[in-house]
Amino acid sequence: MYQDLSFMRIPLPEDVLKLKSFGDFEGAQKMIQHFLSKDIPQSLRKRLEIEEDIIRVMGNDEYPYTYEEALEIMSSHLKDFKEEELRYLKEISAADWIYIDGTVHFQRRFYENLIKTRPDLAARVMVQDVDDARANEQKQKLLNDNIKYMKEHGSRSVRIQIRATIKAKKEFEEVGRKVRVHLPVPKICQQVSNIKILASSPEIAYTAPENAPQRTVYFETELQPDQEFMVEYAYDYHVDYVELDPARAAAKQPDFCLEEQAPHIMFTPYLRELRDELAGDETNPVILARRFYDFVTTKVMYSYMREYFTIDCIPEYCAVNQKGDCGVQALLFITLCRMSGIPARWQSGLYATEFYTGCHDWAQFYVEPYGWVFADPSFGGSAWRSGNTERWNYYFGNLDIFRMPANSEIQMDFMPEKKWLRGDPIDNQRGEFEYEDHGLLYSQLEVNQELISMEEI
Image (tube, rainbow, N blue to C red; front, side):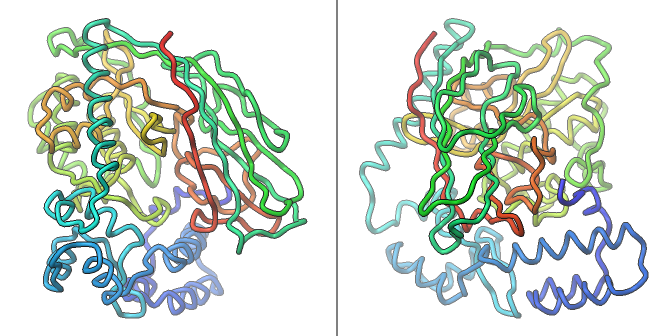
């Protein structure tokens, strides 16, 4: 990988942190260069080199809105919105912000996040889209109907077909230059079989093995005007219904998938304290995993995130701030499980339905005699907040059919490796795009995924 992210566990010099916290990104970069010009330990050098890229990403356009601009957005969209409300949302950490050159700037999706997570604000949107409201009802019905089907039949199998595209935005298009592009595709795993690549544009140069930890198809060509890179694929997807019974859990459990993985699966002092508080004297793996699931789903508020690359330790961030999106919540659950001797691992890719297809992350954990089972804390948390106890319970142990798993690990190299910093060095759901001398960030790309069909088998 371009950068070994495990060095993010190394602390930063105090003066770099001061400048970064104040939002003096230019000053922080100069301070980093000062340290790099000296004879310093290699581990600190590598940490500082990573921080150069983190600051560049943070200062790109992750936090574009000043306080005044954020207030204008809220006032123009919400009925009778007052300035003191924005101040309050900032004070309770509901609206994500940082300092840039000493002034408050809000994250690029702060408004969308507030509308998604706060029903009181959503009810005040002045131009209410009736179609969106109806579509949301249909989405909820889809999930509830899946649970009913799974409980009645014990399993479900579908054949899914998806089309994914990626292209550079016009202002970042460098026609005639050599480009290297990766697009995620399904991988063989517990739920997935019979994968077929149906079409592509241009021709695929390399397809990673079906068991690759982060599977992609790879394109290499000279960029044409307005060129879009596309892959269309199909796969069989099967899940079984399980009700986890603590009384059936074996006395001896396996010892795989229990290790730390710096910087984002780390048994930090705070996480050890949290684990001990939640676990108490309990040793049954089903009860322990359920306690961790309950904590994440009931205490952590769903929140859109800045790029994962800019966070030092994702599960600790989640546990301290008690907010995070699907992947942040999944990593906290995985880490707490591993700390307790419960094998746990990552899965991610797409959530795909007729109403929406986009990025999603979830977790697996292992309990004898059940084997690998699932946990989706963000779907579970959404159900809990809406009062849907049945769905909340379902996503502890089970998954729905609306998934495309492309990744079974975090922080893994592509095949072939990407030369420059990835838009997401942790995960891969949208794809990656680079020229010979630099890569593009997601703010510089247009990415789309579309469900073509889903048929019962």
